[in-house]
Length: 336
Image 1 (spheres, rainbow, N blue to C red):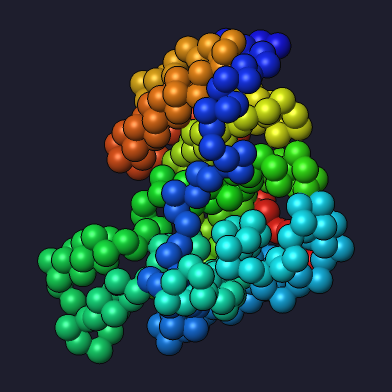
Image 2: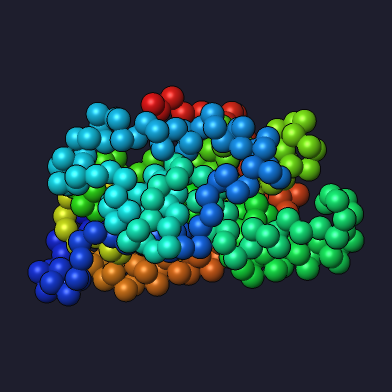
């Protein structure tokens, strides 16, 4: 089978044997429980955001995932005794763990603040340290220094949309082959960054004291749209590179790559972007007749570098040609 220049044949037994595990592990953004503080530590300064979060599926997963019949069926198929076990399959994407180590960690929430913005142990104090009583008290230089210190300590700020998108797609591509092939878990969410970021998880409240949960500007949404499609390509490629067997998961990742490549081609017809062209060239050059996981990973890395270039060079003001492609409304889940 061949799609968009990528050829999918059976993987040789020698290559399968060379891969130590069959469970994909590309959660580069997984939290270290020892560095994680939990969402309660954020409420003092971010109460309005916390109130929004409590009405999301991200929040509800903590109380309701373990009661889900679907989750129970998946756990049974994978012989998982405890869905919330800290060393289990489910916790990396569905829970926030806090503890001295991964072995003794306990879930304290579902998908929460640090799931998107990084483990806060190293930056939560400095992140909120102002020279006076409120954010308006600091000078531009002081603010820049405070932000830089937090980022150096691992904070992923909303402005770093390529990193936020990577956190989203590292779970929404479901990076676990056996979870899909054996457990029957869906092979990824129907995720689109603009719709999902401007839907139930939107919490743009801090700078107006919780008065208005503002949508991102049209310019910013245009950047979101391109970065979201491109990051989907990156993580789908990485997932495919780790696949070790024919089956539902590999076919789903191949189809997902085809869909996002088609989306990026449409994008580039509108904006003629060199970084987007580089992404398409990276995906189109792959020949996995073996297949060659190293080549697919290399292509994913090229896509990642092109995403960084695009995100750092664009404010969206010249991307109005994309407006007709943007979703009309935000994503709201009826899960649970």
